[in-house]
Length: 178
Image (cartoon, rainbow, N blue to C red; front, side, top):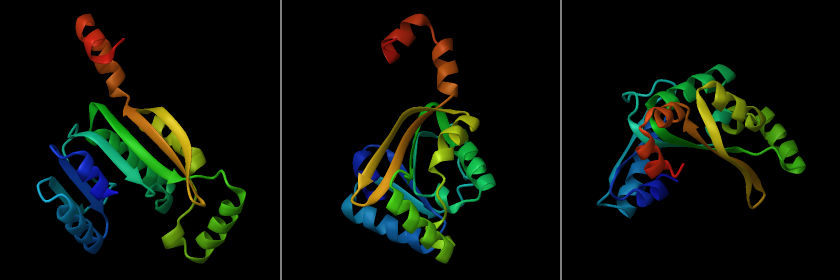
């Protein structure tokens, strides 16, 4: 996924994060091999305490992470993501979907056998947790990758609504089409 993000952002800076230093280094090597001219960075970082200034990012993407965190850590992580987003920033989130009965059963069994790898399903609570963190869900859809169900949500920093309301009318219309 990081390689794809780097390719989609050839003129910007793309940061990848992983808790594992080895995985972060591997991910960075793969991305730099595919896009040697891109400004790509990947490091071992705990998402609960992001080492970036507030308002640093236009976009943040998170894939299949929340399932591995406790409820408190999910809330803390979402607040950190909102903090590093610019007022008009977007947050894209992919979580394991809970919309396939057989998959849910297998996931429950796998989670009980190897919880550190499988985690737990959190999909049904995620929209409310995003709202509680100060973001607004603007897109919410289910997709299936083979047998693997996923839910993809896109949220915007709630500060974007305040920023839009406080802009002069001529800029609101030109920039947002409203």
